[in-house]
Amino acid sequence: MTATAAEGSEPDADDTPWQAKRYFNRLWAGEAASAFGTRISHVALPLIAVVVLHAPAWQVGLLTAAEGFCYLGFGLHAGAWVDRWRRRPVLIASSLLRCVLVALIPIAAALHLLSLGLLVVVAFGVSALTMFFDLALFAFVPLVLGRSRLNWGNARLNGTDSVAQVAGPTVASVLIGALTAPYAMAVDAVSYLASALGAFLVPIPEARRTTEPGTSRRPIRQDILEGLRFLRGEKLLLILAGVSASYNFFATGTTAVLVPHLVHEAGLGTTGVSIVFAVSGIGGVIGAALTGRLANRSPATALWAFPTACLFGGLLLPWGDGWVAGLLAGIGGAFTGMGIVVYNTTATSLRQSRTPSEMLGRLRSALRTTAWSGATLGALAGGALASAASPKLTLVIGSIGGLLVFLAAGLTPMRTVTQADTEAARPS
Image (cartoon, rainbow, N blue to C red; front, top):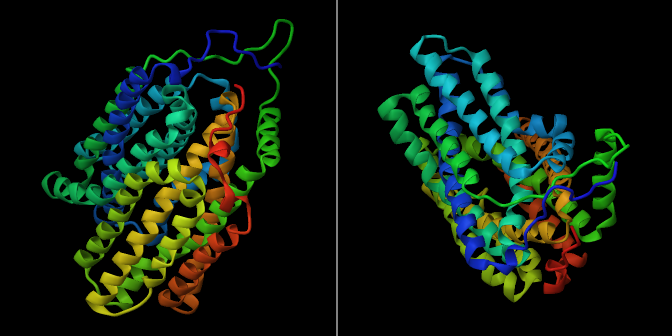
């Protein structure tokens, strides 16, 4: 099969900045609504399992690990499929299907049919559809905005997600208190409708990969291998993949034991833990606000120097007792979040700018699968170390390990990335 742009052509959004921003704002508004709805479900779904269905801890962990299992199970295939399809219909369809799946929970609650099996089906179904949505969005944003405004657009998306991380749990608590957890999920279902509407209102023409006359579509495995070969040939993108996976190993191990440390070792209650996470989320909001200015002035600063400096703040996480421990963990988490949001946003824009449009889905899936591999192993290792030694020791090792990953990255081209590297768009 030979890839061609046989049906329509992809527009150059750089030629019409006012229209590009108008379309992006529609897409962003739908994604913002979905981000807040998703945060509600992140709180409500485990509560339904624990409080309503009395599920044991390992079953609750199964629900929260659903997204990682989806990427590890068929993430590479999903990326190849997304590259064969038009991205806007994928965004719309995945949002509508997530709406239907999430709506099953309040409906089942009203009919007294709630079960753990239903929660597992919904969790894995929504996670799989979210994976397709994420891959399609990664490939669609450059078509909407043009490559010159990717830092601005990705900063808005990441900033909104950071705000949702801060405010989402509070909104979820209010809704769950007023409606109970199963019926609060209805708000998330409505948010997916908003997401579908946002994508529907962005009428960007897309090229479609077709097969030439007389040829047959090649196996999906060949598309996957083509994407992996592209990643292997892009040294800078390969370095970013390694840095992200290595950092995720330590960061996820740290995250997995932070709550046990704050509750059992520092003596904080649920309110104190919630405040720590809220304060930590503020760092992400600040990072999103700083990204555009930092990346435009010095991509190397945004990609390496600034995140590395912020990760020194993460060393505060394990120390203190009582409210001092909460204060240090909140400040450490805020610095870490600020640095990682700047890094993620800059790295995302760089990946999009250096990758052909028809390869973006496969690149994203390869990167996400790699990142989730590191995260899954890190969570297992962090839990095992915390059980064998202590959560505090795990936090010490995790915070130092994450910092060392970025310090080591300073020996790579990450430290000398230039504006030309971030704008080196390959022909699509």
